[in-house]
Length: 187
Length: 150
Image (cartoon, rainbow over all chains, first blue to last red; front, side, top):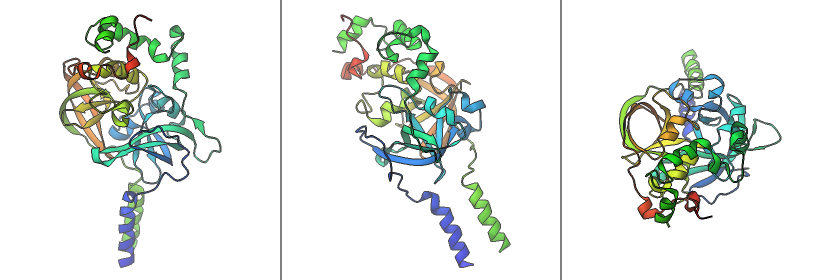
């Protein structure tokens, strides 16, 4: 009886035990103050569905943030960023694996002093157990396909129609200043 | 023995299959931020990656599908899941139009694995961009405003 109670106690505390997910990680450093390379297996989930029970077809078809439900401890990881430099999230890279098990590699941001938990930069992804990693860098191509009218030189964020419409209306600082005025007062 | 076996079986299934939980009604005032720049420190400290100084970058990040959060007056970040019924929390229009704005949100708070999640039922007030920190930090990142003479 005591052994069984001990076994139950062990099971109850297992998820809370610290685990080392850094072993075998190939993640590149971004020299972020709180980064830790981590690789693990997880299920790709619609975060809104997971948290609130309000679910959508195909994890929201790219309109909803996707999470990683880590297999080892059932912790919900929030991928904030893909592997591209710049301003792209990870949803486009995760969506093909909606509700599927994957292996991922990237950088976890950890700072217990400020309560920073389970925020992840996704660098590599593959179906669980597959041989070849896929770089999580597909956002810009997806954007270009979605916005053929914005084709041109320079990075996508200079050409994004929605962003440019807001800047045209309220300026780079959101204060109604002209381009020249905003540039001058920030030099 | 049968009872304990049942307890073990129940536990082993209850863990991984954690269901969506009940939320808590809450009203929060704060700024709509891009969470990657805020959490990662990639562009500087927390004060520099909010407000007017970071407005253009906040637009880029929101449009680029980086998760949006509400930085509350309590210093906590609330990951925004929906705003007034709009569930497009990855590059959606509603969140994009609120980038850097100070709002008061009435909604439902959920907590999971150390993160706060917020479903905004109503934007009670939208004060626009109130943190004019470009006076202190210029523009972050500096290339956000290109030289108009080039």
